[in-house]
Image (cartoon, rainbow, N blue to C red; front, top):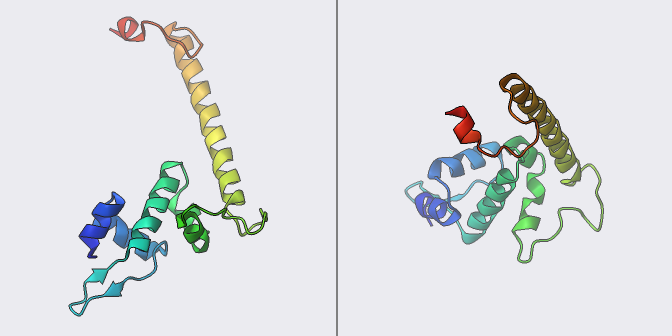
Length: 137
């Protein structure tokens, strides 16, 4: 299938497919006689895996570092990205651990920011803010 059809099937854009290819997340596609990219159904599945991992908070660089393991997640049913229970440096485990630590740090930063804003505006410090919209009006 051509790039537009593959992108639509994967729920993304042709530009994203070219970007993933450029970054090494997708292998170079076959080319038609006229030079147009031709994608198979496996590429569509791989792009869906890439998009799902990005939606979970991983970055393109995270995925590039483990791109050789993406096809394991594209299988039906998906296999583990660890090999035989191995959670060593070549698996996704270190990448996920780093991303979780970054998310925890960002949550802590935002919590401090929220608490400071609440103190300065006289709002309650807790997460429940009944009537917030009315108080800001």
